[in-house]
Image (cartoon, rainbow, N blue to C red):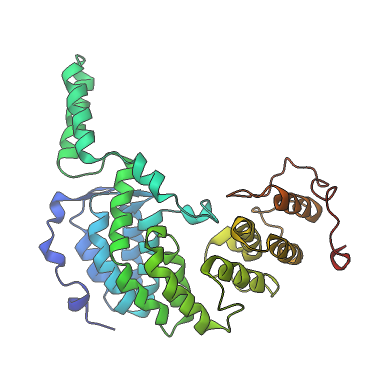
Length: 336
């Protein structure tokens, strides 16, 4: 653990008065970060609660949000034990909001996200254009206030504002990668979880992730290319007991998540029939949660259907008949 002075070096060099969060000026953020690094457990918990409510407020990010990321990264790597846990969670939320609850298993489409973002320059141009054409004084005042807010550096487009924080966390990934070797398993797990939300960094992140996988347990198929290696690892996982959920994937129903992930890999697999059989083996282990609240027969029919009509995304559909697919193929006798 490092001293708080080391973790927060440069904190006072930032003009927080010029930055904002959900409740106005971000001048209180340095004090919250100092409390996070302090010895008082209750005060630290309250400080994190405040940060979760102001620089990340119900999914929104603000001009102050990305400026907190380097300090939260240092805390995640070298802060007090409890602070490290909360700092990593806040970094994940600042990067991807709560996409872990619905953008699975394919993850975030960063290209579409970036394409949808409206730059501050474009926002200013639009404000100027609307102000020039507006005649109503009340609406004109609102437009001028919006232009001033944008000119001060605050995000006015939700996509662009979120990308600021996402890219701030992305810039810290070389430092966060070190946590894959942390002695604490919960830290390794949450770090791998965070890394998975940065597909643009796959070239740098995938090798250490696979190496970490080798270090956690004997590889199911270490010599395979990455996509097939992942499919083999998921298939091996799907046959085991349900572990205690350490992430939010599929509301903790990890076997359900494994099945959906295997479906997405079928198109890239050399042996899609083999993956199908692994999916069928995993079906009895799927929990009856809100994620997959359908009878086993319906799931099996839909999954078998995917063998003949694989897609980039193959979610289980409640619209298909329980016999769909089963009418075309009979399962091996051991699954009958």
